[in-house]
Image (cartoon, rainbow, N blue to C red):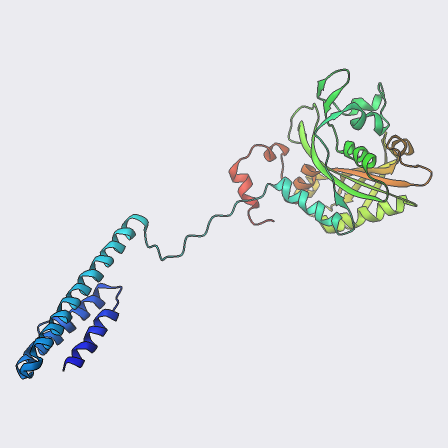
Length: 339
Ligand code: PHE
């Protein structure tokens, strides 16, 4: 009999419950009117006199322990519910954190970097505040050169001139000054021009510069690389190179891609021709190589430069360049799913 009670004692001490129903079932089982304890107390008279004392003691322990267990479980259940009241259900998985969106300029910049890094270009950067040498003179644009007027410059200081770079070509010079050929680098960055702000131009925008210097680099290499780029970037494989002029490249060209005339938007952005200008390029002028202490007899190279906004506007059919800088959440949120 006593052994039986000891087994119940063990059961009581091992018991655990998380719901009030479970606790109630336990209470009824041990402490209810027809419960185990009442049954056991009824047995009291059948116990041998010598054992009665011990039996009484274990029975009391069982009763106290069972009652205490019920109280204790109820209390911790209440505490949990109180916590729930303040913090909600702490066992529930959290609501997913809402994802932000990358800025379209970053998306396009990363795409361009990705395309060129697959064919061996690394990424280099230079300062936005430049001196005259890196932005102009070393690029074959000496003082009073008329082509300086092509790029309306924000000057910070005069004599010696410190300015906001007008193009990423300044990074070409810096890279050549500090690296020996072979050179394959692209330089994304922000550039500044003192221009009126409109739907198509802004005083702050972004460019990616490309520079490739090695022995025997030819115009054909340039053309092939550009073709690869337009295929990867736009899925378009028809390009044309129009002769153009940049002081730092000779010969120079402007690159157009055939965008097609499938939609009304295509008519609008290509002015009805189907062709779209996307960048400037050319063979690095030997004077520029000399200015950066590269042997122009031994090495040749090509360079190109493109505007990131322009490409982003094409890719995402963005009608106004100002949208990139207004930080309108309705605009930015549309790029959530793009990496
Ligand atoms: N720097 C030129 C521009 O800003 C683009 C360019 C880069 C052209 C490299 C030729 C070679 O317009």
